[in-house]
Image 1: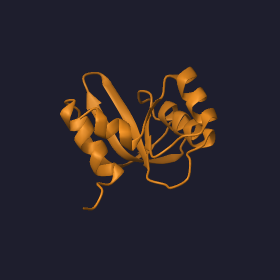
Image 2: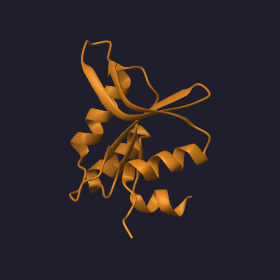
Image 3: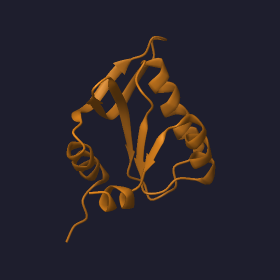
Image 4: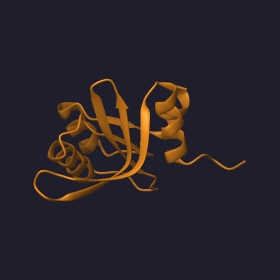
Length: 111
């Protein structure tokens, strides 16, 4: 049996929680930089960009910092990053900045 992709798991996860979901979103930030987000989820006054990194390697702190800056530059709520695993520095930075990190296990357990 083939494993579901992180994208499909993420979509199911957010749909079950009542979010409106948009796919493959390109937004221009106030600085003029263009950002691409895998998903944009909306509920009430919150709009979160979601980045999905379906990598075999660990997602590092630089990816989290870049997602945080992109979110701020586009005036969105804190980003959500989905991946298979995160470095300790990435987890530490995300805790300080209140950025949500989700793994495949998080998406499957909480369904």
